[in-house]
Length: 192
Image (tube, rainbow, N blue to C red; front, side, top):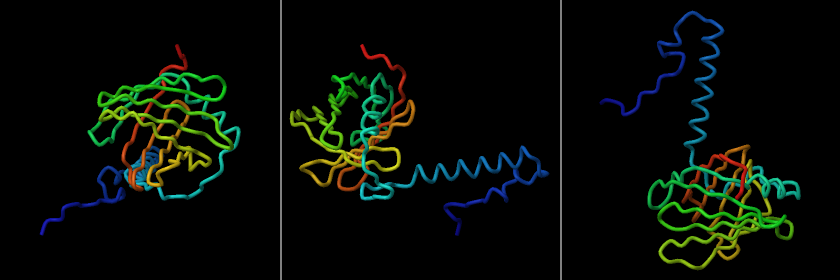
């Protein structure tokens, strides 16, 4: 019987059999690190994971509302209708919020983040299939680098928005499973 997968450890790979050098050692460590990152990236994450969940501070809220502003380019890599381009520009709403509009092709997406009592609010509207009813979500905690928004009337819906320097990851969980994943890169802080 032929195995479907054959895993070779880095030590067994012919490229790692050369004489030990600093460059070889660095390459070996880099390969291990890349493998680890790949495994972490491919590991499915569920919305029920509550590891290291922390309360949002006033500084977290202000940093989020400041860092989300600007023009972003990206892609919705996972959606019910397949991958879609996802460009969005967030503009300020006074000092207490930000709003953005994305047109990935299947629908218009209206995003509005705003300060709430001890947290952040998210009003999201998609015009998919003629929808006109917005969803309201509330965030009072963060997990790792993401702010966790939970639906007020639907316990099966969460939106995690992670901002790291000029990159953003938006994960939408439905029934505790990843439903939509959006990857964004900021290309301008300007908001016209």
